Image 1: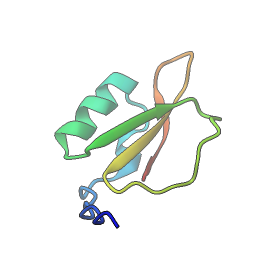
Image 2: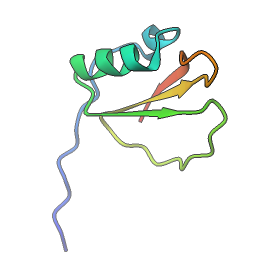
Image 3: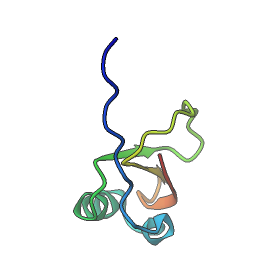
Length: 73
């Protein structure tokens, strides 16, 4: 059996602080604050519900390119 990977902690960060930023600015800020993975999605994307520690998700409005929702995992 393969060993389990070490759990990563999420940075102490408020996901709401990304709402309203452009996707590019939000991604840059997220990596600077210590997030290891950043995922940008359309607002109504169908995604799996697995939780990945260290990942920050953005729902990005296609017309404006701005983050409209942000959540951990």
